[in-house]
Image 1 (cartoon, rainbow, N blue to C red):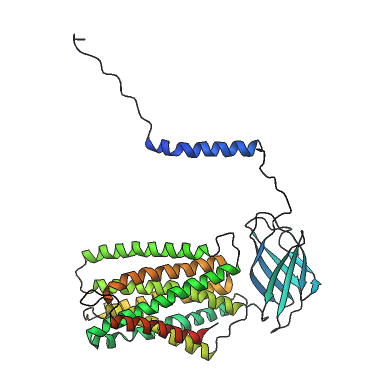
Image 2 (image 1 turned 60 degrees about the vertical axis):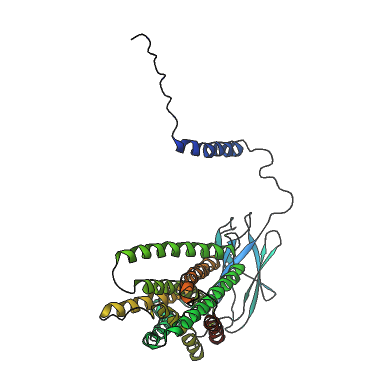
Length: 405
């Protein structure tokens, strides 16, 4: 080694960054393992009686029996010891001796119910607590066969696909009106969507309150709304990127129409869910008046879909027709899927989440459409826009009175 030169110390190898992030989790896991293994003082101790909290998620009626689908909404296992129907003790069978935390179970009651009658049911637990359920109008639960699903498909077509498709036939008329009134129609679309969004949130919250709260209850509505809003933001960003690579005229308006159809489709998914569930428990008879009500109510949804493309350039060929057909299917067909799920496997928590999806999607679509309503001075709430918003709200309210189920 030459004189005057110094040796450099070897550099220490640093631990990878991911290890520093993982270390607290490893320590936490070790601490929990020690607590459980050595039964740390205070764990598992409780003063007072067990907390029993059962929720009745669904009631199924078959000849000579009533089946209750249960969910344990509390921290402790629950055992059903007696069943009372209209103040009389009756025999019953249950799927498990007790229902564990967050688990489900069924209680099948032997009872010769009469169609059209109302029944009050009480489940008595091992600690003496009661869980109440009610059958407002007794009707046999339909069997899930091919005929049943065919009927659900027809219901979905009646309330979703057909009205939306009819409403989209306004497109040629919209293209021919004064451009100033296109702003009015866009504002009317905002009114329609705002009503649908609020309606979805309220229905979801109401349904969530009727089921188990352990999975979040009404919070599922907001969780679904947030998820749908963020998902549509991502979809919109992807579509904007595609639009930059495309040279076809009118890509922007068609993008908005796609988002409107997607938001309405998610709303109709929840609507079909509620209709299918109501039909399955016998509280909905799809008569002519109800079909007419849905036709008037949901036809306005078709108008909301085609309003953003009113300014798009005319294009020949089947591409435009194909787009319209696709948008109508996207908005209307989810009602069929919702009717299937609601009639065969209804769950309040799932329904609340789906209604939240619809509300969040509609909120994001409103954000997308709002800039198109501004006038030449940049005002969003100019007189024509205010008239359109109020017209949309009133129209949806008036037609909604026809479809109370």
